Length: 214
Image 1 (cartoon, rainbow, N blue to C red):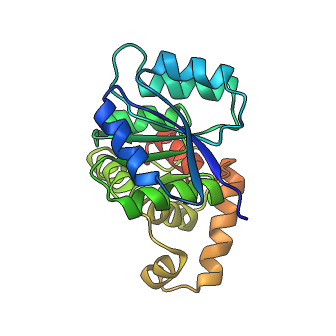
Image 2: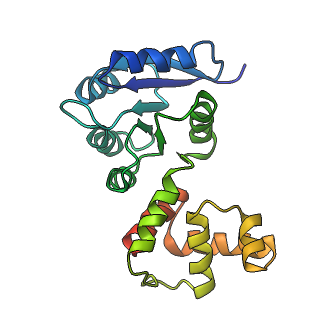
C-alpha cells in the first residue's frame, strides 16, 4: 500500500477547514491528522504531535500569528517539514514574503480540487509547487523594474534561460523559443542550478528576487 502523507491544516475559518477536510476525505495518498484555527495552535500541535507530519497547509491572514510567521517558525525548528500556503492573496508582496521564508508551495484558494491535490502530490514528489498564477505575477513585477544581470557568473544565455524558467516554460518550450535543442536547455538548467546554489524552482525564484530578476 502506498504511503499516506500526514497533513495538518490551519485556517481561522472553520468553514474553510471543513472544506479542505471534505476535499481530502477518502484520498488514499493524504490523511489529515490535525487541524488548527490559529498559527499559535498549529505550532503547538506540531511540537506535541506523536505522528510524523509531512505537510502543513496554512492560510496567510489569521488572527495572531500569520501563515508567513508560522512558516518561518516551522522552517527554523523543522526544516524538513513541508509548508503549503493556501490563500486568497495573489499580491506580489505576500508571494515574495512566502518565498523568503522558504515555503514549499503557494496556491490560491480559488484553485479547484484537482489543482490542490496535484499541488500536494507535487510537494511530496518534487519538494515544491507554486500555482500557475504565481510565477507570472512575480515576472510581471520584474518587468516593471530595471533588469540587471546578476552579480554571478551566469552567461547571457543562462540568464535568458533562467528568465524563461521563471515564466514556467518547459525545457521543450524554451528550446523552441531560443532555437536550441532540449538537451542544451537541460544542460543550461543544470549549470544554472549549480551556479546559483539552488535545489529547486523555489531557490531559483529567491535568487532571481535577490538579483532583481523577479
